[in-house]
Image 1 (cartoon, helix red, strand yellow):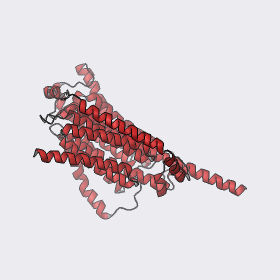
Image 2 (cartoon, one colour):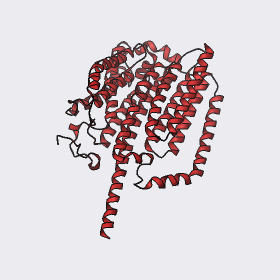
Image 3 (cartoon, each protein chain N blue to C red):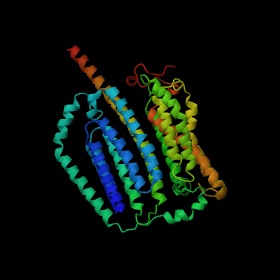
Image 4 (tube, rainbow over the protein chains, first blue to last red):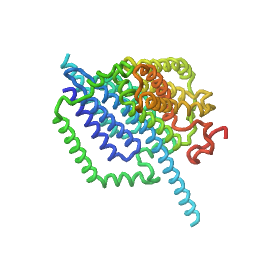
Length: 108
Length: 343
């Protein structure tokens, strides 16, 4: 029962994250969606290996999830830096365009 | 008692789903990040319910304690550059695209419906798959318990991480190093971000807390051999100390040399690779450790990895190289009047 409950929760979290990843335009929201997705996958992985009847734990999925959490932080950090840089480049482009338009207006 | 626990599970699952939904649909990104931090804390409760205390610690320390501040720092960086009203727009769309984007969003609504329908189908399919999996699932718990004595540690999760599946962890440490290299290559921001002014209370609190946090981090690394804890949790706690230092604007930080930092970042991967080579020399197999020395070797490895992980995570938060490391002038429009003071 516990296993199925948490497995289903993990899958739903994965689906939520995927939906946000596709639909939301903002880069930070996309990264948040990706994080929710990975949390769902981790929850599913550990919940599937958990045996409620014997209370026995399986160390291998837990170690995998531990690895996964660290890697997902790594990916998040790189994605955040990239999106910050993207935003800066976009701002610079916008500023340059505005300047050029102003120059054109002055020329006319 | 059983009823109570089931009720708790149900409540926790519903709260997790509600928080996830809220964080993905709330209009304010700041609010979404706060929801995300709450979500991570509740996730660690769920890990405790799954009898995975190692994962719970890692989730609380890394997944929440570090990812949340990472998001907040990135949000601050984006907002400071772009002004608040840019926040609801996609990057790279120029200046007057706000209204255009919204209009296009409304136009795309059939597409949105398709995506929603497809996601619902996916959810249904996945849940159906979960319900028809034959149980109990096969696991490796017996094998792990059988060879635990050869691993040199008593905690099965640490044994799997560092000994049985050492190859995974080696690659993971490499991923961390690669992430740090990428972050340092992309941004040219000076390492300690300027903080306007720190209150004396905060400085005093940081001075008092810092040794304590380092002690807890070291204890977690040491404890990894016997019970819950390990290099990742200890490293995350250490990185929390470094993040505190970074946001408190201590005077000696801006003048910091980058060589010790670089050495610290590479220490963990280096020790891991040396240990892997040692395995080839002694046991003729990559990453296989001699049984009698496994305990001390793993402790040494954990200490080195913990230090490197802490430094790497703190470098992620800082989001740039140390100021003394910048040989060229920073990327123009990005840093006005806050370039490296030395050059």
